[in-house]
Image 1 (cartoon, rainbow, N blue to C red):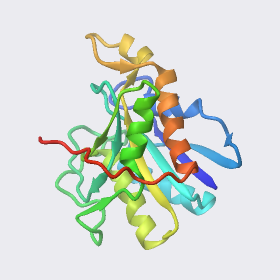
Image 2 (image 1 turned 45 degrees about the horizontal axis):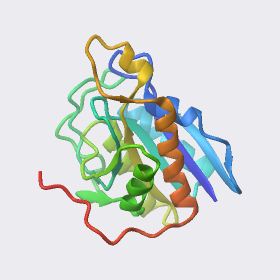
Image 3 (image 1 turned 30 degrees about the horizontal axis):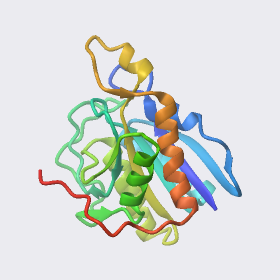
Length: 214
């Protein structure tokens, strides 16, 4: 098996992005499974170009993309992606599209075909806060997840994709002018590793609720 793991470059004036710093710490192999790590631009057009090139080059069996959710104190395992771009801020190329579909010919939304409840539970069992999330936002993170799920349906039917959102790491949080939630970079790395272990072991989804009332 080959798993592609991606993290985003820093954005919005930050010098670090915990998603990228976390994947840098991953091994190149987990048993017989090759782990390919890649940096993704935090820009809509460039992110699409990069992920399409990576999929063509690597042809991974699984893809786990990791993004930053600054302000959270837990790892979010995403369940769905919306066919919507609504950028609250400029991307790193100075673009700010809004009220725009990710793909004109795509579905309104795609669901992640991975055992997201199982992944969240496994991360929590390592002592790291985690939950299933039902919204990946409307910025480049959701854009990338939607694009991956779209391409899996249209071009790579054997490929399965998912997405994790991680908080600020402790170094980034220490540079903020006000106190913000964070996780140690080792916890972030461990959370990503745990998700990969679930995929490698081909564990099935938990048959129990994990929803939200708001």
